[in-house]
Amino acid sequence: MRHTDAPRQEHLLTMGLFDLVEDGAGGLDRRRNPVADAFAAHTRQERAVAAALSATT
Image 1 (tube, helix red, strand yellow):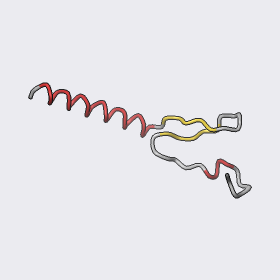
Image 2 (cartoon, rainbow, N blue to C red; image 1 turned 90 degrees about the horizontal axis):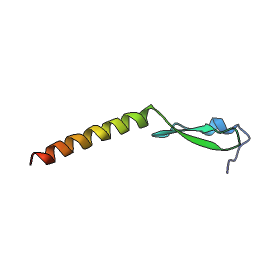
Image 3 (cartoon, one colour; image 1 turned 90 degrees about the vertical axis):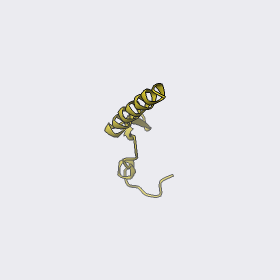
Protein backbone atom coordinates (compact mmCIF):
# COMPACT_ATOMS: atom_id res chain seq x y z
CA MET A 1 0.00 0.00 0.00
CA ARG A 2 1.36 3.40 -0.98
CA HIS A 3 0.93 6.38 1.30
CA THR A 4 1.28 9.05 -1.38
CA ASP A 5 -0.46 10.28 -4.50
CA ALA A 6 2.79 10.27 -6.51
CA PRO A 7 2.80 8.04 -9.60
CA ARG A 8 3.79 4.44 -8.92
CA GLN A 9 6.74 4.76 -11.32
CA GLU A 10 8.40 7.19 -8.88
CA HIS A 11 8.61 4.42 -6.28
CA LEU A 12 10.18 1.70 -8.43
CA LEU A 13 13.82 0.89 -7.83
CA THR A 14 16.30 -1.14 -9.81
CA MET A 15 16.66 -4.23 -7.67
CA GLY A 16 19.10 -6.96 -8.57
CA LEU A 17 18.56 -9.19 -11.57
CA PHE A 18 15.15 -7.93 -12.70
CA ASP A 19 13.50 -4.61 -13.45
CA LEU A 20 9.82 -3.92 -12.79
CA VAL A 21 7.98 -2.61 -15.85
CA GLU A 22 4.36 -1.46 -16.11
CA ASP A 23 2.33 -4.13 -17.94
CA GLY A 24 -0.40 -1.81 -19.22
CA ALA A 25 -3.09 -3.54 -17.16
CA GLY A 26 -2.25 -1.93 -13.82
CA GLY A 27 0.33 -4.50 -12.84
CA LEU A 28 4.06 -4.97 -13.09
CA ASP A 29 6.16 -7.42 -15.09
CA ARG A 30 9.59 -8.60 -14.03
CA ARG A 31 12.10 -8.20 -16.88
CA ARG A 32 15.61 -9.58 -16.88
CA ASN A 33 18.26 -6.90 -17.04
CA PRO A 34 21.92 -7.06 -18.18
CA VAL A 35 22.99 -7.96 -14.63
CA ALA A 36 20.88 -11.14 -14.85
CA ASP A 37 22.55 -12.09 -18.13
CA ALA A 38 26.04 -11.46 -16.72
CA PHE A 39 25.23 -13.49 -13.60
CA ALA A 40 23.92 -16.40 -15.69
CA ALA A 41 27.05 -16.36 -17.87
CA HIS A 42 29.28 -16.28 -14.79
CA THR A 43 27.51 -19.21 -13.14
CA ARG A 44 27.67 -21.27 -16.36
CA GLN A 45 31.40 -20.60 -16.59
CA GLU A 46 32.02 -21.50 -12.94
CA ARG A 47 29.96 -24.68 -13.29
CA ALA A 48 32.06 -25.71 -16.30
CA VAL A 49 35.30 -25.03 -14.38
CA ALA A 50 34.07 -27.06 -11.40
CA ALA A 51 33.08 -29.95 -13.67
CA ALA A 52 36.47 -29.90 -15.38
CA LEU A 53 38.27 -29.90 -12.03
CA SER A 54 36.21 -32.77 -10.65
CA ALA A 55 36.85 -34.81 -13.82
CA THR A 56 40.62 -34.58 -13.30
CA THR A 57 40.59 -35.74 -9.67
